[in-house]
Length: 270
Image 1 (tube, rainbow, N blue to C red):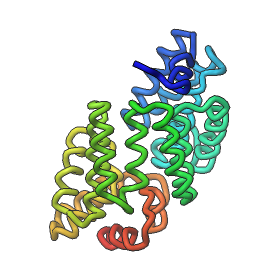
Image 2 (image 1 turned 30 degrees about the vertical axis):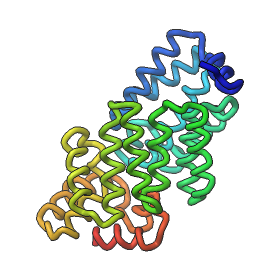
Image 3 (image 1 turned 120 degrees about the vertical axis):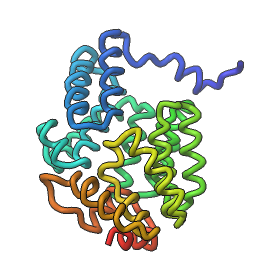
C-alpha cells in the first residue's frame, strides 16, 4: 500500500504514551455514548484524570469539550450532575475546544462543527465536518456529523452519510436510525420517520426522550393519542427544571436551517 505524506504523518502521530490516560479516555468516551446525566458525570471525572496524567492529550480535551457542550444542551438534569448551567457549560465547552485545537484531532473538528451550527454558520460547519473526515476517514462520527448539516437541505444525502457511519461502526446503529428518522420527517415521509424513531426509543430510550420529531410525526399521521403521550411523557419531561420549550429553542437545538423545515416541525408540535 502506498501512503501519502499526510497519511504517513497521521500514522506517526501518537496522541498519548500514557496507557493509563488512554484507558481512562476510552472508558470516558464509552460513558458519554450512554447519554445519561450519571454517565456524563462519571465520564467527566475520568477524562479530567486522563488530562492530569497527560496534559497534552488533545483528544481527551476534545471529548471534554463535547461533554460540556452537549451537557449544557441536554438541560437541568445534566446541569445538576455536572455542576453547570447552560451558559457555563457552553463556556467550558469552548475552553476545552480551544485547548484541543492546539493539536486538532477529528473529534475537535466535530465539536467545532457543532459550535458553528449553534451559531448558524452552516458553511463553516460543513468545512469542519470535512476536516474531521480528512483526519480520520474511518471514524464513523465524522460521517454522522455530516448528517446534522444535510438532513434538512439534502435529506437523501444525510441518510447516505448515516448509513455510512453505521457501516464503519455497527455500534452507532441507534445514532444512524435517529438521524435517518429526522431526515425522513423532513422529507414528509412520516411513516418512515416513526418507524426509525420508534426503533431508537426501544434500544436507546434516553436519546428519544427529548426528541421533537416523533410526536410531530405522530401528529401528522393523525395518531393524536400517541402524539400527546410522547409529547407529555417524553418531550416535555426532558425539560424538567428548565424553561418550557419554545419554537426558537427547538429550531436551535435540532439545527434546522431552512424556514419551511422549521415551520414543518413546529406546526407538527403545535
